[in-house]
Length: 341
Ligand code: XIL
Image 1: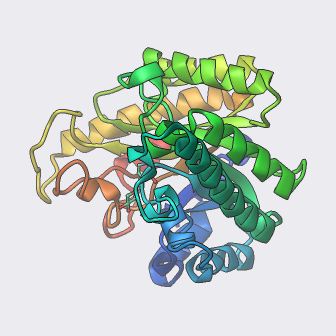
Image 2: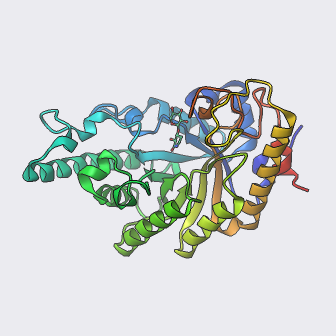
């Protein structure tokens, strides 16, 4: 009988995992019940899943996750109210079905912006009203920063049509619908990268100064065995903690491949690579423990190597980013995290 992750980290921070509703059954469910405090929907709470067509909300899968969590004394994080990906194309079309981004007439552009913000407001309020008592914390917007794009803001349809107003609208609507208790996060990847971190900081500061209700920053933390440094990850959290914000690790996984590497190791992963992964997981969790006061929780983007988006991103291949292997057995990384000495 191996130790429980949740119990191991009880004095530090909650542990979470992202899952699909199908994983609420069988051996996977048992693994989750033993090791995690929080669940996140890997896909079924994204905009296109919840509101695939205007006015038609699909709660079935999201409800299933919430029910499983309740039955087992777990809490749920919501991912995500707003994103440029996995969002219905209908959001960004005008009444004639024309893409809003193509509009050149100034008055019509203004009308489109109003319409999009109204749709967003409805989307956010409808969801938050339904789940406000069931959700521990909310990813309100996801991946809005892109240092390579104009103004350092991702040139998404949201941004092209509304500027940063969609961010403000989403947070304000969530607060109004959810009340003072709901905890609202801005989530992004690569927040260790100084350009990304600083632009995110600037945006958050500007929003806070305007009274936009942001409670914390979600750091996705999709890392690999080679980088980025643990210091850069924790260093970024320090900056946001100084603004009085909470930090969450929201989507942790550790690829076996360096970012530019497109090879496929297949199923024979060398032992020394698994050991390297364990050593880096050890260093990471030691830093998390040491900084527990500024970290509200650590969520993995999965739980065991049998199910990970990294098997299809950025190319199709075998990856093994978690603490448990495909058979749901503890890997060297599990022991490194649980028993770092
Ligand atoms: C990924 C899911 O894991 C995949 O199943 C899906 O096909 C694409 O999205 N950043 C995020 C997550 O914020 O929503 C993404 O999840 C992974 C990257």
